[in-house]
Length: 357
Image 1: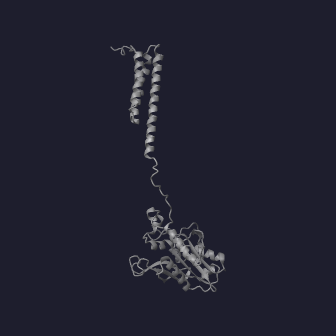
Image 2: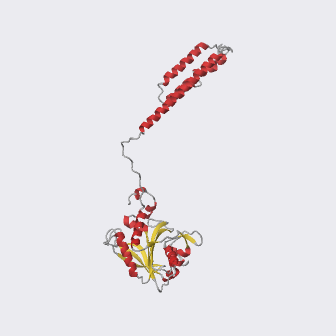
Image 3: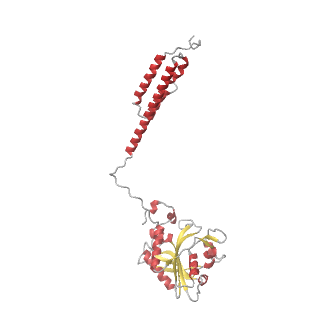
């Protein structure tokens, strides 16, 4: 029968245990010099301060030590445990500091390297084309007028000779805010607003650039796009003035050899009305894939201002006349840059946008 089974307590050699504790402290300090990473440091912590360590055994043996020797053994065990913990923590801090220095050295600033130039923004291709269009008409004596994007349906349709039952409303599927307001489908309401604000003064010579909205979404249409519309009202204005203005505009925009043609068309707010084509920017009118072999590219619509629209604007069609035109900025930009999908303008792909300017 063993002493444990018989209930006898195995005696503890306090002097030998104290000596072993001091040896363990010195041994840990030596081993710490070879601990070069956190994993090795953790192994030493478990070995010297874990539940099966010599320190833990010494503390658990206090109950089997004579009362006179308990203070000495307890004091020594606690001092060794604290010294080991301090040594482990100090070495952990040294490892962290060394790792920090290593990272700083790897990321150190090399003053001999050339500087990085700042990334500069660019104008959007639509902005480039829109500003060029504006500059052309400003040089002809036109001024820029603006209006709200949320517009009254009376100004967007009714006063432009498009009553509620007019088929032209079906061609402009709209985003209505309420029964009387909508997101404008064209910038034509600006023409009415400007005439009403300035009648009967002459001449009226404005362009109205801005965003417009329709429920369209395909490679050649977008729910939001940009228009530039123009209006000139004065005494004796004729179709010849309209054609001359548009020819000058086309040659400034596409080149001095550009030709235009007017094809009869229909718009509720102009009479007579026409679609305007320019000679193909790729083949010069000879016929190619871009123009479908016709030699022409459609760019805008135009016409003489309808008498009723003049009346709605506050002018007497018996005394004055005028012309109006409208073009899509995206359409012009697609022709200018050879872009086949209008949606690219709104996808914010830097690979696309960085090609311009």
